[in-house]
Image 1 (tube, rainbow, N blue to C red):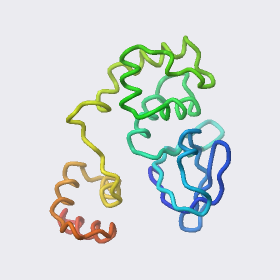
Image 2: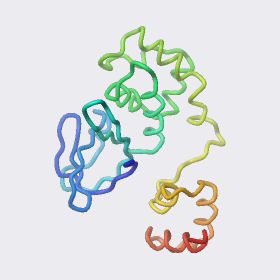
Image 3: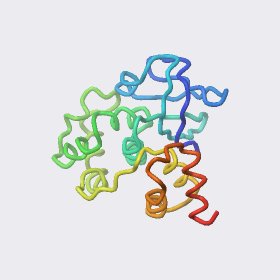
Image 4: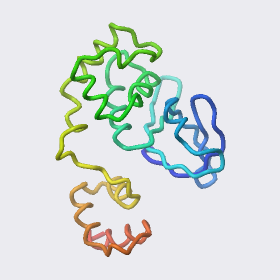
Length: 189
């Protein structure tokens, strides 16, 4: 599963970009709002990803932060909501704002999203009610956008364990690869 990519933007189109990572070009679909925020062609970009497997295609969807990618997954699991609609819904605004509007039962938040009428908006609100707790609680666990943290979590280590080990490393250690090496030594691998 591809969950994170970092590379150079080679091409930008209306609903996707091509990101070159180690000589390989990945077509990544982004929401219109996200595409408006990313740098220009030739610039570097870090993007969280979700690989959607359809009957006849594999599509990679991209997000500028981890929480939005998690929100996309929740929305994508709602029957009848396709990946394009889920992509646009998850990028309406910060996940905390979306959660508040869903808790209020505000269907208007979905206005302008293709394929989402009143009936489907009600269904989405019903399905997501109660599932968005992690997006607004004050004690919410912030996921650091640190490359070493993400790499270690993707290797299968528990988030709490990784945080503890990374906090033990010297603050002046900035190189992600060095952090990973030192963390793996502390984790016993």
